[in-house]
Image (tube, rainbow, N blue to C red; front, side, top):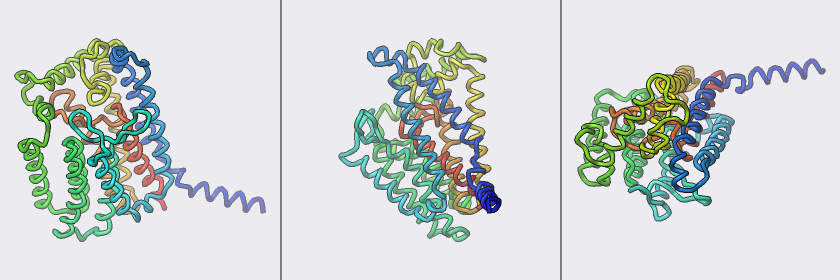
Length: 381
């Protein structure tokens, strides 16, 4: 009898999804997060000293966000992702409700945008970061349900599903997050089988919409300056051009091996505004140099590769579409954020995954990692 019990236990262990956890994916995300914590601490020393607050103020808050993010990642991994597929419409509706709350009187305005909901203890909740996660699930559910049937009418429905959250995000206004969502949607529609001419029309509409937003004055003057500063920073006298020039100087100062942790002059003297959030890569570039930047890129490459691999081995089309959306999310944000610090992309305020200070973004990114790991774990079931 005991032999039968042991055999049953062994069989359950061998068939358990936990045997197939992608440790390389999770480990790379955690390693990038550790680098982010180090850089957040270093880049906020001058800021905390000037504000007469604890030197670990920002580090402690980010550590809380990381802890919550890891818990959320574990929770997402524990629920069979196919249950999320079955409840995709509810996830999508919850996303819309969150975005409606932030543009209502409950939302808080800061730096020209109403993108947050104020929480007790001085914390803020940013629904637009979770909207990326929710939209990926909601849109993937619809596309998987109509696999091979994506004609013009169904494509218009998919575009409407994507257009509602994009419109609500633009009301904040937040052009950077809208761009990220647009890239996610185009990537998912491409894999879902949308025709090339339809995708071209969608791309042209997105570009036209972005230009219209700028021309119609939906963005503040400083937001427009941020977007256009990279085109001609030498002749732009705005604060955005100053930010960009200081950013490039900090990265250039790093050289091959960097100036050493907490020994970067641009970082220690707080010459780079918003360095712990949008421009966190400049702290890494200055203090750890090309080697540090290459290490971070290698970690990001592993995350993107393992997510792409999971898309290929997913047991169903829903899992494939979800992973493609997450690949697009991470790849675009990494390219855009690093590109804007080096002056080759517009400054949009898009955070660098697992690196930038910000609780909502950190938690949402770990939720995405948990979803990819979830699909990978259950690829044999």
